Length: 417
Image 1 (cartoon, rainbow, N blue to C red):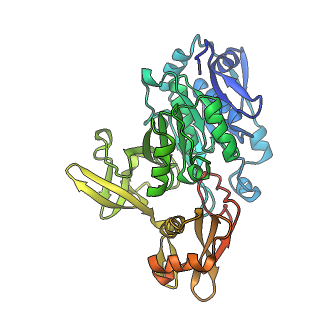
Image 2 (cartoon, one colour):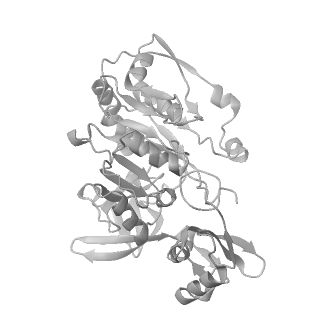
């Protein structure tokens, strides 16, 4: 894509929704502005518009996920009155995007409040300033012509990270969130996408087999563990891309990055990220403001369990998140492990494993599987029995045509199920 004097910040390829950097500068230059401190955007363009105004005006913004249920919206205070509230503020004249970058970097009153996914209960709010939000943003001349595919929910931390990465490099974002997998692949080709960031579950949905996308220079995964089969598939589809894993959370923003699945603690975070036993902990100075961590505690337990991959220098793999485990009759089971075994069976393209209440065992494992026509459940169960202990084999297996993703782009039961 050729960089224009007024480059596009974000565009939805299937509609005429579009926002340029010049659009934002022109809107900010008006004598008086109506500013909304709480927004539930209907789409990614509206989310970027709201975020751009908040950063430039150095004001707080609360960003609600439009996929929240009515119960969640009510409990989190996203009432019609709150979302309709506006403040009249003075406009500012900013001559160019570079000057806007400098203004945003110096912002001290800007605070962005996001919400956790709510996978283990009601979503919780976390508030960040620009320092923590932009901690992992890379700025370089080689990124000046990058075109990003936004495959994450723009109201969650991973989506905001892509938006800021594009913003500080004056890049274009192609909004692919919620598109059908075939349309995403079409957009990657038609729009000249150079960088893609998404969950492993999202990548598994894409029809990549047999095609080579040699314009893509960067492929980033986050939010879930990626299995060997997926990594091989990505390397074949994107032979010119650097493939990286990113560790990030709503609580602390983006922290770690690795080529492959082995992480190390970067020098800039030495003394503020540590492994204690087999758990990953972060210092409270890295956390956003919110009810997620005890303010009396210096260190925050992320709940992520790791294993050492080397000591010189110290390197580790993130194995799982403790809270995602399921207790089946007193035995702990990692649903991700079971899903990976299911995907290894010939003909199975995707699987998700989750728990349902059971009066005898407390919980039972269930699986939804996307597989080729004619896949036999009995033979699939024999495969599971050869690989897994009996308590790890799902009691219920259901074959489905597709697996819808959660609002954060992961494979798993929708919120509330």
